[in-house]
Image 1 (tube, rainbow, N blue to C red):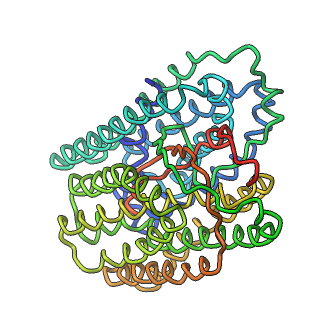
Image 2: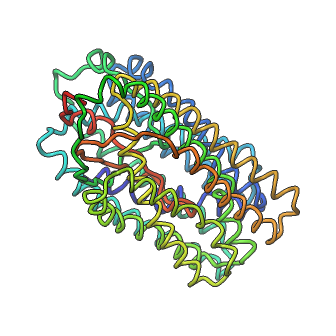
Image 3: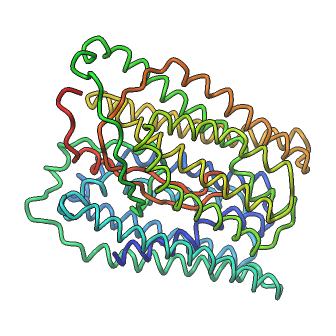
Length: 458
């Protein structure tokens, strides 16, 4: 539990403020957007070595501890940069990439490791308690970081404030490593045994396991036996359409997503306290909404949930054009958290249950690669548009409008997709970070899904 709590503080007080730091050292608004997006691609590519790295290190635990330590150490160059008062874009991108490499590469092995040390019968209650603690600590870290920055900024010591929060993040991550090291792996659990089990990349960017468990009873499968043979090809086609839709949404979201922080802090000239308020509102609304959408799914099904979330995402970025009032934008961010909760829960349910298990690893690999490319492509498209349009407030409005239009057009990929009805499952989500564009960054725990008994007729 304690490793989850200390990790949560690190996410809240450290990673959430990287884009703001880029602005504080004078790198510019486009650079700030790239810092919050490009490193994810670098880290995601390095995630692909995790299977081989576990063999090199001899166990999942050793590799996870190495990655977590690397992630914590990545904050110290940021502390130095803040104290010295300057850093260029390339070193900052390299440091952020190091942070995400340490986090992402530990994701797949952690799934396998947790399976060996947490008995299946207690996983739901264990992860529920862990998640509640982690969420509280993430929120506390987020608020503490914003409060420190506001206090320092009022006294003309903004960069010292950043040095303080990054040092705090590093210490809490290292503290988290010390707690992780105390976990004991059963003797029967060896690296060789685990390597026989595929560790696929996560569909969302992955990091340290802070999860939001959501128990959703979804509609029973209807006529699966009779439909199985004739439906195999349609399931494959529908799976491709679903993956295409998810990648398209990622692309369109990232056109505007990385640039909300620069828009708030530079164009709207929000204070750090206002900035953290908007972040916290989205974070809380998304977490609270998950329980509501769970009940919605029990009644209407995961397919309707995905459609509800997909339609709900369409206007979110464009709503930022309507007003620059903090309270109205807080309402927009609250709606954003609610709609992203619906979209991501529906996405995870349909993603894992639409794809036959024998095709899941391959399709996950395709999606992970395509998603990372889409993420960076969207950020670069947004950067090019801002540069071409002059980078003023009107340029941001164009960005937000294009993103909304793109999300609407992406819905066309869902039409005609014959998504299967699915059996009751437990969806456990990792809460990985806090974002203005998506409220949180999270990913499912694959081992939890694989543990669940499946309908043999499915």
